[in-house]
Image (cartoon, rainbow, N blue to C red):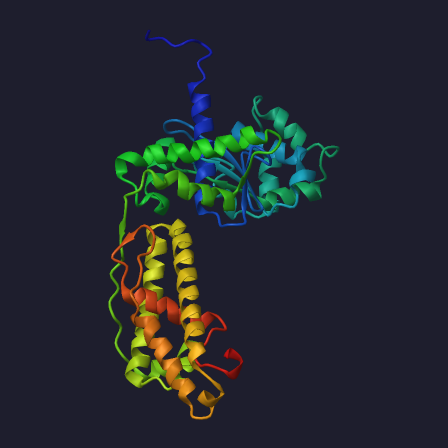
Length: 374
């Protein structure tokens, strides 16, 4: 069978697959607490941006009579009351805009110039019905149409379906997945997105917090068993670092920690911050692993301090032995055996100790005992 049926809809379906890939890209780049909508307020809605997605095979141009543009504008006019709170209306198209098209350099034009170009253009019969609606004063006022044009942008020359798929495979989310498995991993996420439409056919909504949470589980079967811990060089020692107002340094000074140990604490803090950033570059979803790791560290140092407080008394605050006990707790916390971050091999002690300093920097915890600790 070489000749397809007249009603073959492969190209139409390819366009829908392209739309889902674009939506997936927005989901991967969105933050917890945000939402992405599909087919609710345009092809894709992210934040206050409504995106109309158009895919064309091969090389093609977006001409002055392009149905894609005129129909998109018509839809914006008809649905303006529902969409007017948006900050941007974007036509995302794989087509290029030739210099003789009225849409050339469209996004750089003012709304009044855009209006004049549309108004003056001798439209083709195919797109005329859309233009008639756009300039029908009964449908929308000129003032409101100018507001639409001020927000209407054309992103042309966007990657085609095979190109966007290749780009997604290189996304940081999939860095830990073998190249041969990345298409399958993307397919799993697409299926998750499709299921959201099945769950509620009245509103195809992607809650990014849920997406990120489920993504970690969904992709776990594709990832390598363990990730090597990033290598971070130890910074040099500079006395000026100890006088920059860091809270954790002040808290260590309060228990009379020596300068060399202060430098070590600062180096561990800096290295752990750099390692943290490197881990997020490997895969942003690993942040959850770090949160769990830090919670365990916080619990451990709180427990150590609480346990040692049983050896203090009112006399301890008269002879300053409470300071010695504070020092003992500190050094025990940074010399205890450290655990691995979930999913990693070779977690370094400096990272655990640096996160201890980070906890002191960002919380009310302090090493120095007070009489209220008794």
